[in-house]
Image (cartoon, rainbow, N blue to C red; front, side, top):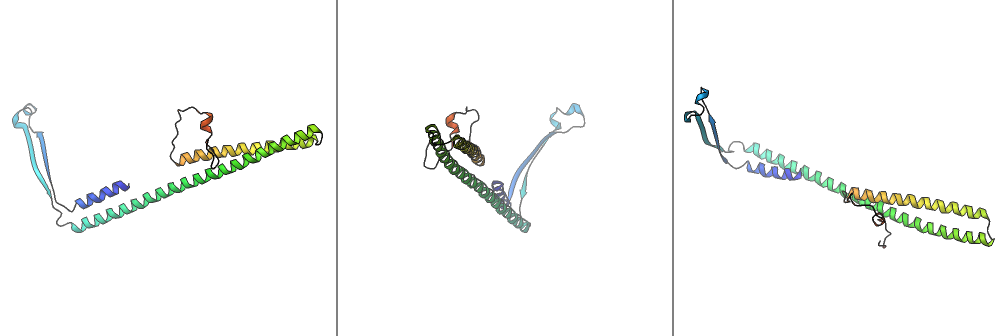
Amino acid sequence: HLHAAVAAIGVAEADFYPRVTLSGRLGLESFDSSDLLGWDSRSFTVGPKVYLPIFSGGKLTQQLELTKEKQKSSALSYRKTVLAAWHEVDNAIDAWRAQQSQQHKLSIAHQYTEQAMKMIERNYQQGTSDHLAVLQQKGQVLNSQIQLNNSTTQAEIAVVSLYKTLGGGWDNSQPVTEKSTMLITTPGEAK
């Protein structure tokens, strides 16, 4: 729309200058259909057409001003669209980073929960802990695994949202591999 509005300004400015056009017409005229193929039935006209904007100056000036205002409106609409898109991308990047951080923290918490589980199992085997403590710790390990899995799902959704906000950029014909699903990395970590 902005490009068309800029072009319309050029057209409105060109209306201030005189124009000369040549036009022509070629045809057949006859009272009887048998005479259509003869030279006498052929007709043609050629002539110039002159446009002089002498008495329409006020109208042309107002049309130019209106066209310029439409161009300004289109420029503002374009700017609003670009800023909205930038805002969406910025929000998607922030959500992705927050989800990465959350997933990293949950991963560390899960590792500590598993280490605690191993320690409690060792204590149970040595007889210094009861079976109830082992079962409670197993429940905590399962809860931390569920939270980590949910976080991984949310992280993948955040990546898809970011790709969608950026306008796509993936190829559906590529097979999904383990490397292609490992898109989430922690800050400073490269995979």
